[in-house]
Length: 327
Image (tube, rainbow, N blue to C red; front, top):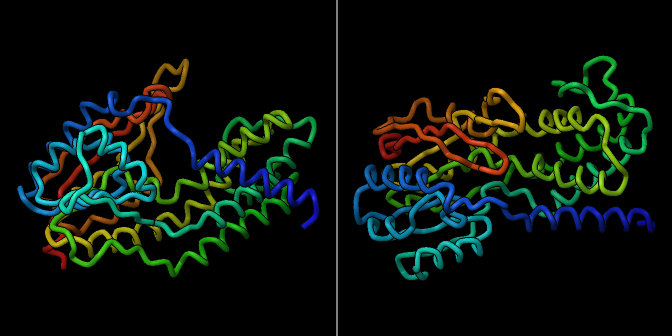
């Protein structure tokens, strides 16, 4: 590896570390008070007292009242990719790990840090190529595919885009045999809320960090919207597989049922907009489709105010699935 390659690899690591260390600028615990109360009440209403409960993607428990659930359940296991964040939940609710309140590190996807670093490195290459191309103007909106005739993006950075897509396809191929292990009939019930939409979202989240890095060094990245749409197309065709694999492990882990909550739609009101933009959510859409044949004991809807600062809310579908009848 030559000096330039070393420098770029180091930059990819820097950007990726910034992404993994990110923290919200919103006060979710305060902002989600109503949503947390409604979701917690739904869990307590649909799951028998004294049973064992698995909470997936637990994080800081901003969306679930851990104190109330600890009183309701016989045992709780908090599952998260970054279990250190759960320590904040314990502190917030004045609880401590015990035989009946445990934390487990769980990877629901299996894509590695090395995979994300390889992608980050490739994406930096594409964006730098665009930033170095003079006299380009951003397109009015994203396009659906790179195959559109006359795409400026493909004309300018065709080889780099091809390498990026090849990298992503290689990552998904290597990942195809990964097994999500949540245990076999280990819990009476489980809660999964807003997790499906995150399974395949890191590549798109990294996009914004790479863009910020390149623009700070080289100025505006032309055609960034078109590139963002291309990355969505490249990654989005694999979302259904990740959702299916995750659900298979989820339903295998419980004996009775699952409180299953997913984003029915996004409600986004950007600055200056007269009316909000409303659309479906990748991952959540597939999550809804995946449970079409499951018996639903109870169902409701609610509003999840994800980010006050970004003016993003989600209309949530929340249901209790009687998984035991499917086994």
